Length: 123
Image (cartoon, rainbow, N blue to C red; front, side, top):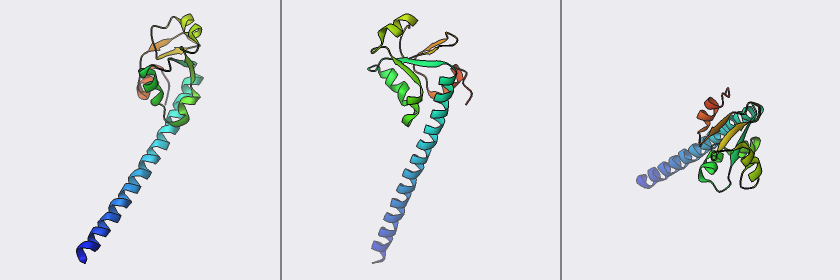
């Protein structure tokens, strides 16, 4: 009898720990989305746009750096949908960040912390 009761208690403790871990993951995901949304707004305000191709794996990965709806805040131009916009900038590849105000360009995938540093965005 005692062994079964102990097993049940351990099972419930394990389940509770799993629920807590899931809640913590959800909380961290929410915090990351808030941070990413702030970053995206700052990037947009500074004049940066992201040029991508929808089928480009590195572009998809760049998009995934922004959790939840934070990516929707960015000004994104899909070169496969608007080739003229990309041709006029003479982009060497995608993803490329382009600053409408300064004419600055940064090409290649970058994690968000690197984006903030390279685009000189205070976070």
